Image (cartoon, rainbow, N blue to C red; front, side, top):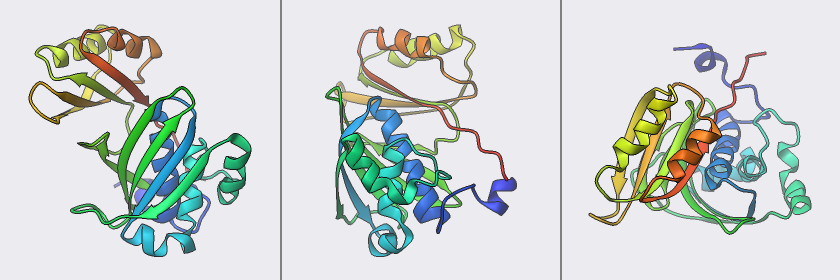
Length: 224
């Protein structure tokens, strides 16, 4: 247990799970898209759908997509900010299976034509859990520097990617693999102990069979 388990995050309220966690989900989705989002469709599940309006969940998700942090006083005004910045967004409800009640499916389109579908939950205390990226199952919380690597399911991809990281002195804390079908598309989620420099991501993009590389760098918070 650490201090954040007791005090919770520094945030704009009212809820660490429905507000602060929702902002973080938006932040991670924006980072994994890798470009400025211009369209977003957000499907809310469970408690996010039933009580989200009262907790500011909708505004919080959009705030994260705009790159705001949970303690930014502009979080409640995110809809107006989105209009100013050219982000179109829509909301709906969905029913998911075997996920936390505070969950959302986010579909994004970026300013450079990129697309991302991400499913994530907010279990409490401002923490999140990403359970799906582009239709493939994942499991990471965004608390460590994270690489999400989309690749063709071919021999040698994992060793080549981890070799790039090792050559730059980056230690792998956790690595997950998933694929749609044998020989089809696959995804690696690699959580690291050190920050991931842009040059490392570029080296991985240049490898054969790599389709897309996204990076997420967590922001460090200090209790106030």
